[in-house]
Length: 366
Image (tube, rainbow, N blue to C red; front, top):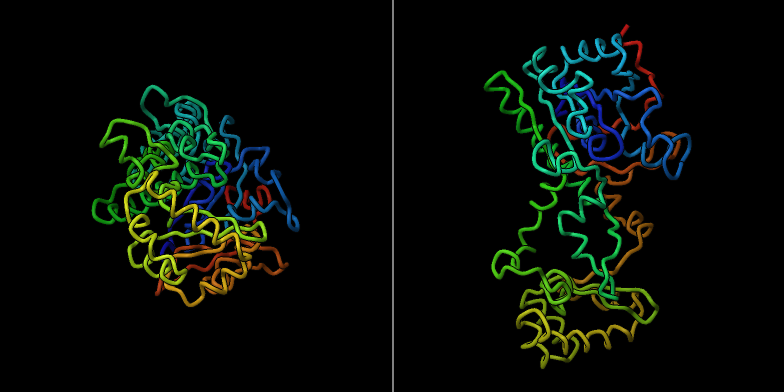
């Protein structure tokens, strides 16, 4: 596997750090979770399946568990000893905490200059907000993306995907792999400063047009990506379910409106986003309300149109496509795991679906 021989020490908790280190473990890295004396909090957060929470199961499989109290001299020394043979350290403390504990990048890399030390925090290690406490929702709010997530009443709605956590995690993973690659040439690791706010805002190139070009915030429901196009929108069906159109290319517009005997709507549908799309949106809403979701799935089956049913989360995990891609895994006890989305033609990942008991590998320090 791609990361065999790489030892990763994970000091992080909750989601961003543990998820990226599990991704590495799935592809052969030795992941060692350094847990505080009380254990990783998500061992006891949320729904359980079998003997573990689903959150813990989907962020910690295939790792080792070592409990250390870094405030204790002997445990602090044990951690630094592990660093002597490590390749990567991941931490997600608030800025300054790792230094106070004596496990910051200067202390660690003084012992082992080859280490890639990745720091994930809400706002980064520098700047006026660097020490501001925040989890995903607060970071999304500060990044401007909650303001884009409006309900039908025009008010901001709770986001349902941990965007800042996920993007911080993926950005850190990319940085770690880049630093490991560079180490092959230089023999030295590096320190990576990941701000989840930075990562979230970096993913907005198709959204910042009105801000950069016209010095104004988006008029959300008129913008291209948020309902301003009839062919990029959500529509209710006769049974109270929903479908989406998700492609505004001219060919998709022509294909659908011709099949619906409404070619008169093509000029408006292919015009600018915003109020001019209203007649098309209203006409399509009336049409889509005449059949059930399943009826529209059958009708669209032979149409070259960007169409999709709105699946609930349970339906999504039951799709044959998800199974075919190995994104739903079953362990020996029948518990479910989210698969690894990194697919290599050679040396594919081999997730180890076993979970570590708390401090199950503490003996490796003695």
